[in-house]
Image (cartoon, chains in turn green, yellow, red):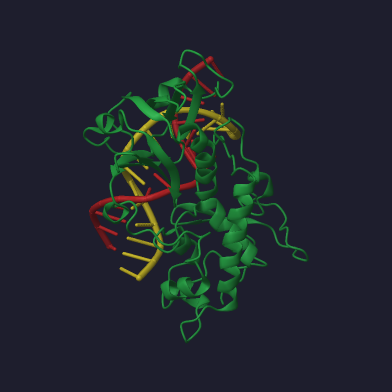
Length: 296
DNA sequence: AGACGGACCTGGACGC
DNA sequence: TGCGTCCAGGTCCGTC
């Protein structure tokens, strides 16, 4: 489900619901997701106020008034839904198609005005996980992440320094969260198409002999930013089960130029190519073999 | 360094 | 209707 735009969409939906609320009770319906919940997980949450909800890469971060933070990764199928009022009073936010047997975490919240709210984490495949941390520098999931692609630290020179002399295909390098944090299989394919770069191009071919970014790398950085910004504005992409927190699907999947468009015509003006699916490192890459260059 | 397969899981789509 | 096979937005780990 979730790459950066989907996680950001979830964050924006959740923030007004949980910020300022107190966690009156935390219930786990099983001992683990992808990993076991930490010791004292419920105890660390109970009674705490949620100060804010932020995002780093594909992680949701709930800041608590104790100084402890709850880190939540949605894996492939994780999702949050919430109810105004007690759980026995389903609201319009209810998603009838979400099986309750995959509800793994239930938080009873007390809103600032005292109203009862319920936040539920559901995750059919359980590739998601939750943990607690105090300082990002000490959190193993956060400490090695590369820059946020929509932040000021992400730039062509920065990527050039990471890519210089490397022979890994650019598709793999962009999925490596140490180079840039938050891209996944969909938006990497889309950004490479926008930049006219083949997914198999060695990253070193995007760097000139002085270690600077070639024009293609400048285009790639711009393409990553534009596709992510547009996807966030569209509420993310819904392939199967992603939902915004009000239950609405994302809309950006209608704007895919290559992802899941195998055998369809390339949309680039003047290009007569056909979108092709290939497998790299066991994952699908979609690209146009005519207009996406194999070398810098 | 990096490619690859397998691992973790469930469910939907498809072919027969 | 059912069964087998393949596929899926992510990441981690071991091996060559």
